[in-house]
Image (cartoon, rainbow, N blue to C red; front, side):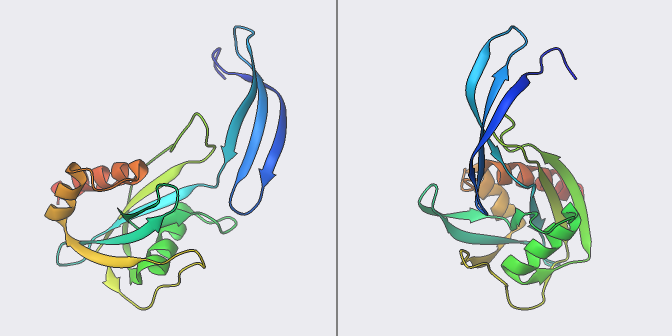
Length: 183
């Protein structure tokens, strides 16, 4: 507990469904100022993985993201949506579901908070080594991907050119590039 912490006076849930949980808090700041409403998006934790094949290619996906209304480059990942699921289990599941690739060599790269001012969740980053194609993807009803293998050096250049729109995934890729440079 910090002297800077806000006190939640009351909370009201405005939207609760499988896609979003939105709550409005009435908060008191340490200086006595009341903030009402302060909107919070409750989210489950997320995972992202940078999967690398034995021949030095990164498994990327291209998909349409309706928020920005563009088809963009991403790395595999998603929500830890199974009850009691660990980040490692979730990242293995997401990699296989989205790309059909699997690995038994995962390295945790770190974690962070996507938007600590508004979101309640954390994101966990992993590097998967020696990934191999094991079978068909198992997409959700709202998913449709193009899976593309791109050499590590080209992914690094794509990252520097700003070709990855998702800033959370940019962080995962930078962590991975630092680790790959030490191989």
